[in-house]
Image (cartoon, rainbow, N blue to C red; front, top):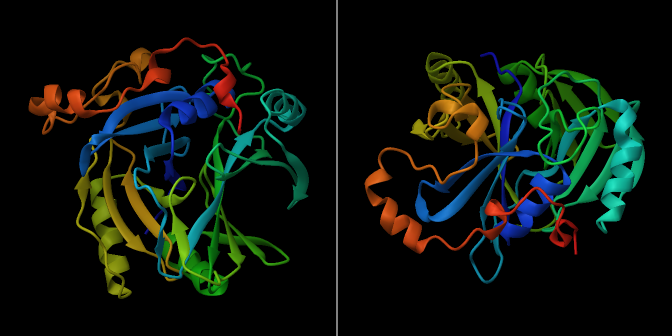
Length: 321
């Protein structure tokens, strides 16, 4: 099968208003879609990306509503999201994040400069100096020459790094391009979202699930036919694969890779402009056609999303505190 790099990454947040302030106003990503979780339509689901929400640039969040964290069985998990930024921009980002109370650490990894920090829910993030072409969003005050270009990659922590790596190579077509201590780096041929780092770091206990936890990493397939072929190939390896689900903006299927991390295969089409004009992305609550007749009920039950309707100013809530 041919995998075209990352499509998106989905995580949980405690506060969508705070999440919006951080990812849209501070990191300068575009809110490309306001919709709901299709298995719980009384819950918001927000998508951020570049100017068009192109595959490989998107991160998505839903609120975590349980009062207490729960745990899942020991296995793999996505521990870090990495964004690509222009190589000359890390000084700008260090100053911008510091001005909003976000502590950073600058390191070098595989000959690239990396700026590490966490979002308000404690999710580890990185800005990686990488010369990646793209269509960055400049509508939130971040100059284009510094703006995030999309996902650089993700880091997985799994019980057996070599087993997961073999799956990435043999089934997804990734290539091992480096090794640094307990970290293996795999790369696809994608323009953006090309890198998967695999850590030899088996969890000692069950993984807590809650705000700041990544639910899954989604990978790109070009078409429904490619997705079906991929599903058949993964099933032939003895893995349980979900049915294909219509997510309005792409088709999805899910499975756990050999290390236990939840992976999704998502189609590139139809994209985020299927129900909104490109210039209006993210400005209205959009529902799939099968929920449209419930709009009044859904809107009545959804909690207020105050930050979605605020201006472009960088509010005090953008920081990590």
